[in-house]
Length: 555
Ligand code: HEM
Ligand SMILES: *[C@@H]1O[C@H](CO)[C@@H](O)[C@H](O)[C@H]1NC(C)=O
Ligand SMILES: *[C@@H]1O[C@H](CO)[C@@H](O)[C@H](O)[C@H]1NC(C)=O
Ligand SMILES: *[C@@H]1O[C@H](CO)[C@@H](O)[C@H](O)[C@H]1NC(C)=O
Image 1 (cartoon, rainbow, N blue to C red):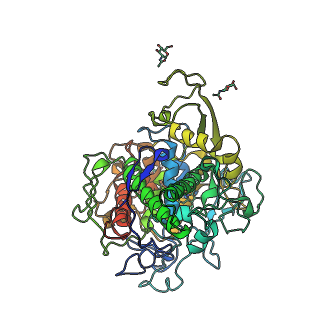
Image 2 (cartoon, rainbow, N blue to C red; image 1 turned 30 degrees about the vertical axis):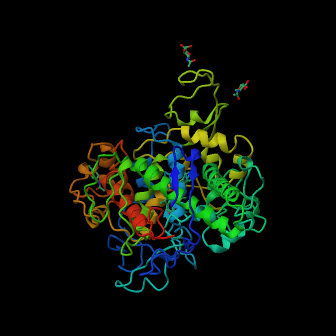
Image 3 (spheres, helix red, strand yellow; image 1 turned 90 degrees about the vertical axis):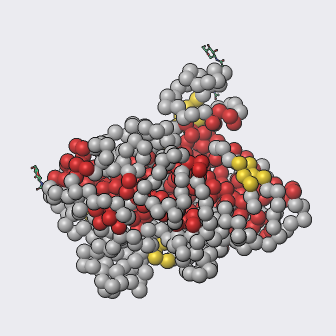
C-alpha cells in the first residue's frame, strides 16, 4: 500500500513504508487487466456506444447529412471574446492537466488506411476563403476503425482506441512496452535523462526517432525531423509547451521516486526499482486525476448529489468524500464515443489564449496562494509584499509543435508551471478562443484549422446521434424546446440563432452533440449531459481497473 500526501501537483511527497516483494504490474497494453474479459481495456479495441449509432446509411456513412455546415455552427455557437476568465477560478493547470489526462486514456486520432476524407466545405464568406471560392474544403480525415465492422446495420462501423483507457502511466512510460524499453536507462530504475540533478533534467533526445506526432509548426510551417523531440512517454506531448512541461514534471517525478527507493533499498536491482517507482507514479497520478482534478473540472461540491447516477453501482460522492467500493470485473472501462467526440471536449472552452509565465524568487508556499486574475510588475495585490513578480507569457497559437525550445530556454519548466497556476482558464461558456477556433495548427496544405468545426465533424464521423437521443441514452429527459437547453437561460441569443440555422425545428433533436452539450454550460462548468457522460466514463475507468491504486487485492 502506498500512502501519499498531495497538495499541489509539485509538492507531492510519497512515503512508502512497505513494499511487497512481488506484485503484478499494470500491463502496458491493457490485456488481462480484466481476467474475466481479457480484452476489455486492451489497446486497439472498440470505443463503446452508449447511444445507438446513427450513420446516415445505418452502416458507416457519416451522421447528420442534413445538418448545417460545421463552420457556420462554429461561427454562431463558439465565437466570441478571448479575454473572458473562469467564473470559478479554474486555472490553466487544470486545463492542461486535463488535456494530458485525455492523452493518458485515449488516442483516436489516427486516420484509417486508406485515408478517407470527409472534408468540411468552407463557406464563401469565411476568413479561410478570402477569394470567395465555390468549392473550397478544409481537409478532414475520418478516424481509423475496426475493418471487420461497417458492413451492415447489424455491424456498424466501430472506431478504435489506440491506447488503454486505464490510468496506467501511458503518458509517462509510453503506449506499449517497446516505447517503455526505449526510454528506460536500465540502471537504478531510471528513465534516460540529461542530468543527474533531477530539477534540471530532461529526457534524452529522440535520436532513435520514436514515431511521435509531428505535424508542421504553424510558426514556420515546414516539416522538421522527429529527432528534435525528447523521449517522453506521451507521443502527443510536443503539441504545446504546457503539455511538455507537465510531461517533464512526471518524468522527473519518476526519477525522483526511483532514486529515493534506491537510497532506501540499496540492494534492489534496476527492474525492482523501476517497477516499484512506476507503480507509485501511477498510483499518485490516479489519485490526483480522480480526487483533485475531476472534482474541480466538474465542480463537484462535497455535498452535491449527482442525481442521474445509480449510486449503488457508482458510489461517487464527490469532493473529499469519495468512497471507493472496489473493483468489479463487470464494469467495462472502454472510452465511449460520446465522451471522445463531445463531452470531454468541454475542456476546449476552458483553453486560454496563452499562459502568463511567472518568475519568482521565493519559497514554494507562494504556489498555494489562490489564483489571482490581476497581473502586475509591482508587488501589489499579493500577500507577500517583498516579492517582486515579473510576468511574461506564452501565446498558444505561436507555440504549437515547438515546445522544447520554448520550455528549455526561457522561461523554463518552473516558470511555466507557476504560470499555469496563476493564469485563469478561459470562461466556462460556449466560446473557444481564437487560438484553437480559427488558429489551431493544421497539416502542410491547411496551416490553421477550426477546432469547433473539427469537433462537430468528428461526432458525425463517429455516427453519433443527435442531442436528444444521447440525453435519453444516458437516462436524462428530452429537451423539447430549444429555449430550455440551458437551465440558467445563458446563451439564449446563440441558441436562438442555432435554432434558426438548424431549420426552426420545435425540438433540438438534430442538434449535434458537441454544441448541444456545450450550450448547457453554466458557471459551475459542464451541464447535466456532459457531466453525466464524463462521470460515467471516469467511474468506469476507476471501477473497471483491477490495478486501481485503492484496490488492495492486487499487488
Ligand atoms: C491547447 C489545448 C488543446 C488543443 C490545441 C487541442 C486540440 C485538439 C485536437 C486538434 C484534437 C483532434 C480533433 C479531431 O480531429 O477530432 C483534439 C481532440 C480532443 N481533445 Fe483537445 N485540445 C486541447 C485541449 C483539450 C483539453 C483541455 C481537453 C479536455 C480536458 C481536450 C479534450 C479532447 C478530447 C477528449 C479529444 C479527443 C481525443 C482523441 O480521440 O484522441 N482537449 N484536441
Ligand atoms: C504590504 O504593504 C502594505 C502597504 O505598503 C503594508 O501596509 C503592509 O504591512 C505590507 N505587508 C507586508 C506583509 O509586508
Ligand atoms: C524584473 O524585471 C526588472 C526589469 O527588467 C529587473 O530589473 C528585475 O531584476 C526583474 N526581477 C526579477 C525578480 O526577475
Ligand atoms: C427560421 O425562422 C426565422 C425567423 O422566423 C427565419 O428568419 C429563418 O430563415 C428560419 N430558418 C430556416 C432555416 O428556415
